[in-house]
Length: 347
Image 1: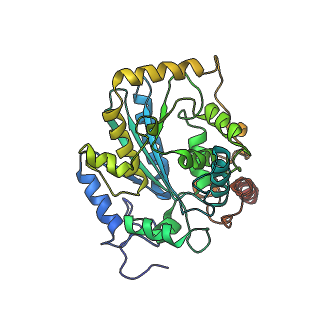
Image 2: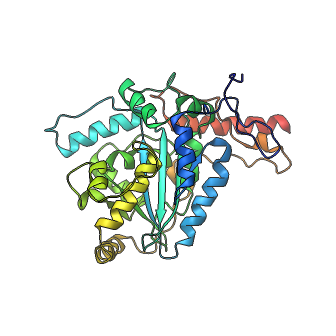
């Protein structure tokens, strides 16, 4: 049902795209408007414009002939387990694994720059999340709501995690290839954990830290952690000390990703970047083949007939929403079954 008084985003033909849209004067709406007026527009991506914006993101990465710097950040709904300050690295990973396995990511931000540091594009991929059905902490939801996230809109228009994960897993950004794309984070252990979960169809993380690091090396061989150069202090503190102005709001994924990108190119010199690239290149396996979608855990459903209406060619987007403790791999398999059933019904 349409909520009275809420504006509805219209298509070129004037039809409404979603029954629930962002309130006209919400913080997120204002942030989107202001970001579009700035030097670098943050592209807000929802289910209805996901295909178009995802292709635009890949096109920007392809335009970086020497490989792109891909800074990313993930917003997630808190922690169900926190290790003590005295925890070992293995204990810290055990807590990370527990949290990532049980919780769903909410927002995935990507900021892309070329080797000279010129920012080429910024995207905020807004994922499906329901505060009524997905596990979360009240403090984290309050923090993210204060930053501008609209949870009603995430539930109504959010991108299905399996759709986003499948796209990313089969993109040239993942795995070893002739063009080295560098994945950049700031305190990125949890970001990498959620990223690995997304591209492997929601599979549980590896059981131990060594296996986790081995998986990251396969899927993201060129990783850069800004903490290696800035071991102390928050992202916000480093931005303020260096006079870097934020675009967008803190604690939103695209703004944090873009801030990380700006900070990296200010702190790490060209010579240091070249030396780091040389080290990463030496660590790559020679003549490695790109990973197929099936290698990452994605089911390979029967291709629908080209004569079918497009609405029937899409996997079901809401029918298999599960609780936060459910495995997305099972959800992805269920989506494939539903798609085949729809195809058979039409035939």
